Image (tube, rainbow, N blue to C red):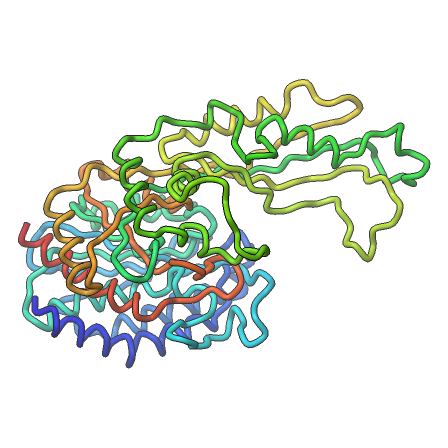
Length: 468
């Protein structure tokens, strides 16, 4: 493969075709089923998948077949089959569903309005993960334009990832014979530590979500009348959370949620911390000036990738401030989201948390913890020499710096699922979600130059996979 020709072709594709198409895709509010239970009636998901299908059909890729696969009641799946030059299979993955709007967008930005500023394409779903199918097919085209052979490629783009991919197993089972046994899986839905080199994800944390509810009354009562006699439901919640989290450090106190961290992952975190420096924490939009965490950059990376954490992501039973009268509240509910170490069993973790919260309810209180979902994490298998060399070669060629390895604090359910189903496969997990890209939050953006370079890197890996 001629690297200069590859870069020229990929850059032109992004400028002339991909960016305009992703911009149109950003306009579609196709929120994932967890955030839009009536997604089917609203029709946005159908609009989005048909847009992707239409673009894919314009690509002159040899012997490519494209199909929107459907199972009644489930989000459609885009399935692309490219026979290639061998029976060896590469599976390329992406998703087209999106997170909800969230608040806090800058005045000149909007989740459903594409805006390009300073080399970034702002809007919901561009980097997470609408670009994946465009990047995948463009990488394959880059090889075919130069007559470079590649393996049989299967591309699947699902519509349920942001809801935990609960539709995907049904499609994987349905398409099992057509997918075969991939020797390489490429996923473009991950993070990058910076925008200066190729970052390869080595692990993903699991996820446990549930609702913790405390009831103290059947209806609200004047706080002057009841306080001092009836406990505050919010105080009881605080007491319960202290059973599972140290409120001073954020450390999870339940041993069942911790695992032994593999030595290789420790060494990779040290190298990543050396490369990123203060960027390990400065990438976030802090409310304080000049943030200075008490832990080292290395410790922060391990906290984010191999340690369990708790976030409170929602609440019920609390009136808005304008409606908050002098009333002792009858109940409070918190939505708890635990990030679990990659090798922690999510179902066992749910039992441990449930037991800790339900045991010995505080006096005069009724406590309930309902598990909403459990998702397994993923730890990559040992990397083959050819893939390690290929990723480094690609990063040097298209970024001018060596590739880096890093765990990711989020969850991609598809990876755990595939890791179990294809234990012999190698994995290239990478993406565009770098510093301040803010997927799921306000001002989400796609870093355009990184998108181009990652696409070229995928082409290099596909070439090396064929000749390994």
